[in-house]
Amino acid sequence: METTSDRMRADGEMKQELTPNPIRATIPLGEGRELARRRGLQRGLLRIEGRWWVGYWWDYTRAPKPIRVRTPICLKSANGKPVTKHEAQRQFDEMKLFKAETDSITPGSSVTVNEFWCVKFLPHIRMKLKDEGQEYGYLYKNHIFPALGNMRLRDVRRANIQDLIYAKQAAYLPDTIHHIKNVISGMFRLAKDLEYYRGDLPTERVQLPPMRRKEKRALDPDQARKLLAVLPEAVHDLCLFLIYTGLRIGEALGLRWRLVNLFPDWQLLDGKEVPPYSMVTGSKTEAGHRTVPLAEPAIRLLQEIKAKTKFAAPEDPVFATPSGRPMDAHNSAARVLKPMAKGVDLEWVSWHALRHTANTWGRMIGMSAMTRQRVFGWSADRMALHYDHASLEEMRRGMEGIAEMLGLGKEKAAVQ
Image (cartoon, rainbow, N blue to C red; front, side, top):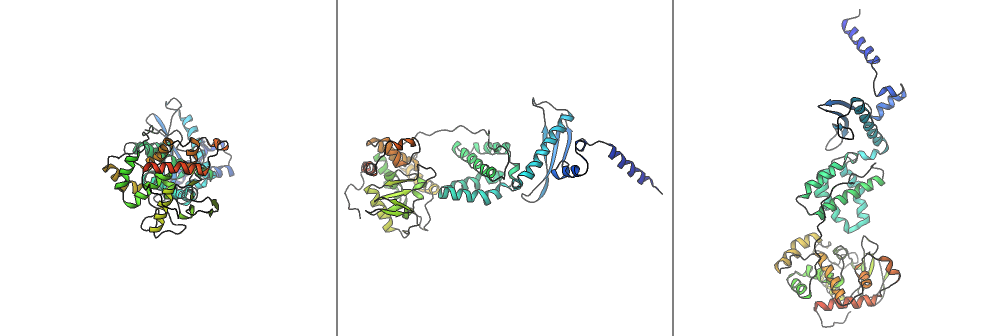
């Protein structure tokens, strides 16, 4: 005997079969319908809220734990006016198809930003940048991870990056904000190369604060002597070495004893023949990889450092902490260099100011632009190297002149 509930259920099923589905109407029955379900066409909800049609996309996220989330998508016309139901449905279907295709073409995009950072990007920057990649880790830990770390790669949008920029703009300098954006760009560029991400980078067209360039300043010899007089021994030796050689702070702190030739004969260092009393530097740029001759005061300084340190093995850093690790540029500047410089009215002094000092003194004593380019590892005007070759001895004479301007240790000591 057929009950009332049975008749109502049968009527409902018949009505459902007779009612056309706007999504399935264009898809063949059988395999096509199952394909539609697999591609995610049934995972959305479209409804009107006030003046706007809003589509909701159901998805799953793994951070901080697997949960079902609903992402709203507001549908508007090109001029910002409300759209019709038919147009809203068409836009929403296209969005769902794009998300489904993204899931199938780049399945790796489901990993979170933090997972990609730890598994792929961190080994990449360590291999490519070596010691100079420490700043990337600092920026990620303190700025990027709190905002984006638990988001999936596919869910990161330009709006998320822009919100991060706006949040940091009030408390940090434009240089820091530009560095944060560059780290994010590098990470998503690698994700795109490895097919973990599809589409335009989320950092494209992000609005950044204008850069405020500081005036480049250099120490005069009296200011340099005043600063060196108040610095503790380790930082004193590092600052004196930077003035003598004009190295970047990253190059100096990345220098190992196996890259320094303190002997009067040619040496095979790191697979490269190095002239007497010279050193080999490493850098991110092609011009940064260079052989730098050492002036006599710089040679004596390195010999003194090597004689008094207990970390003089080939792989040990030249400027090491008491534990044998390389000195940290940020900590040394914040805890020693800046406070001591401020005490002698030189609060503007930085590591780069010492490099600029060496460049300025070199220009003052008549070093040619080509010689200074070879000494300081500039990448500009690189083609000029094919036509004008500065010899090592000419470079050494220029660096001797820089050391003589400081007036320290004028007495000549025999180089061992």
